Length: 116
Length: 107
Image (cartoon, rainbow over all chains, first blue to last red; front, side, top):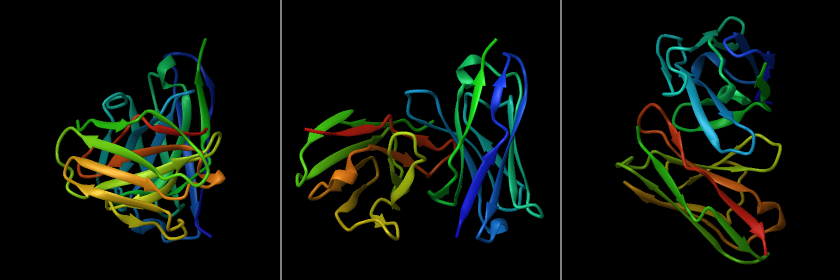
């Protein structure tokens, strides 16, 4: 069964940092690009970042570029999202998702709250 | 960045109705267009990829069409479990972008 499980969410002060993790199981992890997508409370979906299957390329959304870093460890079947300089508008549920031309497997999400 | 605009933002419909949602891209995305369904408190799930290809396990009442800048998602014979929010998303260029969502509500 293909599965993604996010962890690492929590409450952090503005300007702080947090690292999210997403563990994969049930599929050949090193064959797929992996994404992070977020959803602020009551809002729509926002694509955050992608890392290619081999970790050699990354792309970011405009609102997080320069502050967030996506990476992966294929030996651990895990993708990460390092979030620095966090702001109140980064408050959201963060989902990881698998995909090449669309996102066909999603985790249940982890909640990040940026508040003083 | 490519902007995705969905219409309508919400629609009220009854069980058995046919619902059509439109998604327009600010520039051509050829067929690199996906549709997702999201229910409250749940992660999104993929319905359609490549504009018209139905994901495995998705009921045949869901269909997608379009090319370039205009796309549609059609739900035929709406079922109670179809009341949800639907998003389109382009995958031709990074950053990937979503439409703002269309909420399908019970009339």
